[in-house]
Image (cartoon, each protein chain N blue to C red):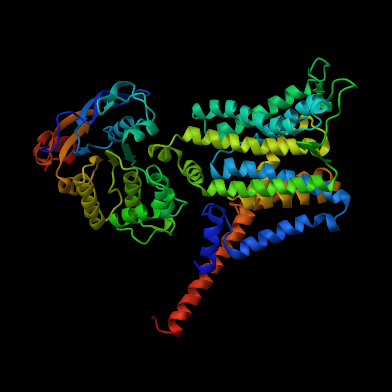
Length: 375
Length: 242
């Protein structure tokens, strides 16, 4: 490793660890360039495009949440959308109930993250402590998501209210009476300062971008910490890892809860973005889409999963005018990638770059050796 | 057995394990004493690996009990037994194939060391295992024998009091096998209690320790290696008539 790299490693510590692709000056310059481009987006994008980009960024949270539990810990959950939906509904119900009294949605935001975590702790506790693994976890999570979706669909009866919030069946969450407030966008209050982040505004876009960067960097630190090594140990060989004295069930449960928190945040942001949440969010397509983003990008790396989600979401928006063709095309992309680059497109490209660099540096080293005598 | 105290550190009492209609372990009583090096041999299907899995808690016994340092650990999970001081290297290749050598050691070493101390500890272990300088390479680039050493090293890394080694020399060259015997004897000399399952008679002769013979899930014979080697019944079931 060259000098520059090691100095950077020293300052960036966990951000630059072995469990994530990309370290050294070129990677972080590229990262800054992408963030800066996104930050200057509102300068050259139309209002409509900014609204769409906000939604892309929300997909990024979902990709990160699945990447953490699947790519790093080896637990494929086909029901990440359950946490997304639960987070969205939790945010909406609390926001509608407390908006008039509080004037902000602070507690709703916390509920949107925390309630999915409680839900994950219960479901995950049962699954992991019963030593369920592999396909059983995947299918159980999908079933749970579909069951919640089915339940939410039949809540059209006016009795299904939680305080001022009416679950509304297929029509989605709405106020129980005309006097109750509509489902609001994020309104954050700190002391006397109140800031509204309207889903259609540039401020919401910046908030989402900031949160996504923060979550991404936070997760980089997490997966490169000792805990990250334990996660990878659980992915590679859970039985072996347990014989070293680690409680694999507890590790899986903890990371499942963290992943649920991120999916819950995505659901919260989505609900605030469209001021709307309905039971379709729990469906098969929603769950499988996340898997496609992460698998196509590369499940074993945070950056790869994130790029996968953003690019595929952009492609699917471009194809949206084609109707059913869009989903078919997504399927075709998945099949092609699984055949040509089973570890994911971004991961494969990064491996190639890594190999080329090693080749070049060994070549350079041998040339140096031939050119001048070793001192 | 000269340095062994009277109280066993690890003890199986009337251990039974049924798989459907097959009785893999059929009432096994074996005591392992502190500081002992103990070999377990027996024909294929004698229940040796199953016995290890019962000792470590990977499988639950159908009947019988396991005691560790006088404590009944029969109902404890593998990680709980590991925390008490037990470690195992299974028969199958037990390394993380997709990780580097250093990362393989990081996970077990982290149990007792702070991250900053780990590079030094890893280097020490690797030197002991003739793997010095391989830190950054992927495990899949190591030879079969080297991977076995690394697997043993990973089990050593948690500083166990009792180490169970299931066929540590499987697939090794004669040179690697004799090196492995040196490593095992060195560990035992440092005070670690070691139980080894092996098929390689040269290796067991080299270890020259108390030896138990399993047959059809039962203890068939026990004694020093010389005694076992001269036992005609053992020859009949296992070594072949000479």
